[in-house]
Every structure is written in C-alpha cells, then in structure tokens.
Image (tube, rainbow, N blue to C red; front, side, top):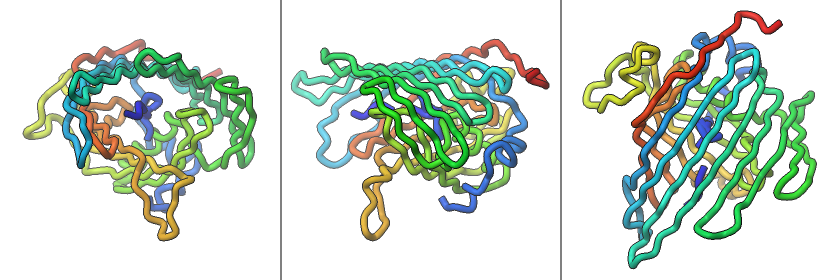
Length: 295
C-alpha cells in the first residue's frame, strides 16, 4: 500500500489534501485564484476512520482498517501548518498483514512561495525512513534543499504548486464553475524528489444536506454546514511514466467533498488494486485568526 493525503492534501496532502485541461491552469499565483477564495481556510482538527471499500483484479486484500488524524492551522499572515498521521493495517489473508505508519508536518506561506516539509514513514518493523527539506520559489523555478534522505539541492519547474495552493486553486476553479483543473504539484512525498501531474475533476456544488448522504461532524457543525462544498476527484500521475500515446494510469486518486473553507469529508483513496474509504467521525474547529493586514 502506498500511503499518501494532500491534501493535503488534501495532502488536502500533505496530508493531505492536494489537490486538465490547461485552461484552468492559467490561474496565476496570487491573483485570480486568491481573489476567488473569499472564505478563509478554517483551522481545524479532523479524524477519519479507514476501511476497505473494494478490491480489484487478483489483489489479495481481505480487509483494511486504520485512521487518519489531521490538524490544519494558521492564516494568511502566518502561513499554514498541516500535521498529518495515517496508520493503516492491510490484511491479505492467511494471517498476513502489513502495518504502515506515516507522519508528516508541513508549513506553507500564504503566497505559495515557500514550503517546508518533514515526512516519517515506517512499514511493519522496518527502520523508519525520513524525508526533510524546504522548497523556495524564486523567479521561474523552485529550488528544493533536502536534508533527508540525503543532502541534495535541485530545481523543479516554477509552474508547480504546493499542497495548500493546490487546494486554493481547486476551490477557485470550483467557484468559477470549472469542472476540470490540471496542476503540477510538489508536496515532498516519496523521497522528496517526486513531482506529480494532477487532474482534478470538480462536480456540481452542494449546499446544506445532500439527499441520501450520511451526516457527519462537518455537515452538522455551525461554521461549516452552511458553506458550499463540491465533490472532487484528484488523480496523481507519474511525470516520468508517460507513454508514446500520452495515455497514463494514475498512480492513485483521491475523492472527497471539499468545503469552500478547505475542510474535506467523505474521503475515498483509490490505489488501483484496492480502494479505501475514510469516514469523518471527529471534527473540531481551531483558533480562527484572520487578520485583515499582515503588518
């Protein structure tokens, strides 16, 4: 199993939560994308219970369980911090199981110019692996300085965005009525050198209770239940694995309902061979500080 959320986001990705057509990618940093995101990001803590939704093909995954703990804090003056942990146990039958534990802490400034990240990963009883570094946007490029797993400095295309900016742009595109958004994303995942092409598919806006959906703490919370949200699916593609025909299968995809304040619910993590669902079962609003100026 490959543990990753952008998301940070939505990694949400960084954890979260991150997050197609090239016309939607024309939103310049700091202008249209930021202007459309009128509702400030909401500092919050969320807990998602994970379970196996389906297996595909010959995959021998009998069951899965786990939990995601996610904390998002900060504001446009101080920048944004996301603290993410995902613990998952996959059972392949005959008493064989795999336990994975991934933790990440990221900080991103509100202008999308600076991104600090640290990711710790452990599988079963193996030694913990670490990725630690910082990425700075200067001119038309992004310079990445890694401390771990090895000390290394390299540059990537300045068109790439960081996880919080990815979510901001998805929200901006959704508010403009766009259904597709193509972005190149750098979130420090894998060994810290990976850059992903992403395709976000944005559905029609949902306001209030959605018929047939099960309420959770986000849809009943006073600060979020009246906000608009959109069903979003973000597919992540390996930039180094393009075929001659240009067709690709995503490395993985994340589906969720994204509120205009950055909160996500109804997670579905698709790893091709199997699909994991994440049900939001705890949600707490953090300290909201949205200064009008950053003097």
